[in-house]
Image 1 (spheres, rainbow, N blue to C red):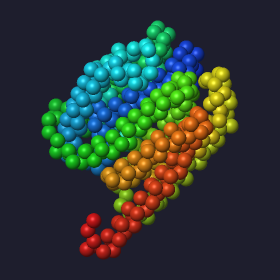
Image 2: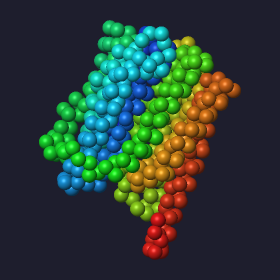
Image 3: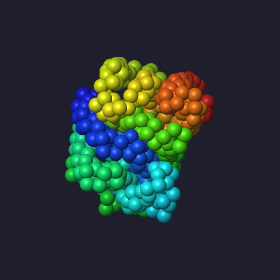
Image 4: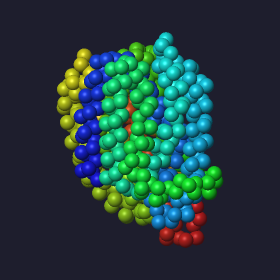
Length: 422
């Protein structure tokens, strides 16, 4: 899985580097700031339109893949969640398009037509999220890799065409269309197996899995919706206190970060989450975590060192003239490495539906980042944002490690004394 994922990510990195340079040449750092804002909005909507059922679908599909009646209950509930989430998102986006546009882009140019376009296509965002959840829950990593690569390449072609035809507005519209493209690719590649597990004709407007999925809705709200809202707000703060160019510079460093961190994303949902869901002892969990660390961390460490020592080349190739990006790399890379180690442990919260632990740790992480970013940017300028990113994940790792250790300690105590009831 790691090897296959490496091939897909390598191709994506190469293609995205070319496209990022093209975007920078045509729309500049200010345009990349706006593109970053819209991407954060669409990422936020992946949870809002589906009410955060992705990880729930992955977890319960991996557990009940042989139990078709249970799966129908699961997908009927997910279907109801999607309808509610999509209606809520579409109405808010369509009727409040102008103020949302002003908040996101802080520009005299009205991009409300883009927000209305997002509102119309909101259902495809929800469908895409649930379909990918099915692929992940079945651990179909080969099909997932194919879906990811093909849909990404189609999206990039559309982005380039729209960029040349309509400049920044075209690029924004192409980004909105990306989830619809991925839905079509999933249906072409994965329809037979998808139809085997999701019997569309038998879906009912009922919610037998309501309590089970609500926990994931709550966790997704904290992990995804609040995360991207914080990112949007920090970009807006940078644009207001410094400039749109500075906001674009931070968007660029996070873009580079996301491109190498995407390598881990599919591994978490395809392997780590289903694997942890079936582990019930501290000894087995420790063995699995150490195995993941031995496989993943050296690869990432080496890759991050290559990025650090090649940062001048990367900036020169992608963002010529933006030398103010160079001091940001060390803090971003250090923070991302600790983040990776933390996320491996934190997936235990999702696997075992440890809602309170998950929400507490995520709120702490987001609160620390928001506080550090606003405080340190006044002290260190743009570099303060990435210093805050690094400090946040040091504290986050310590907290997550303690919470997971406490969970297994409590489990061991319960095994020794059956009379204990939590």
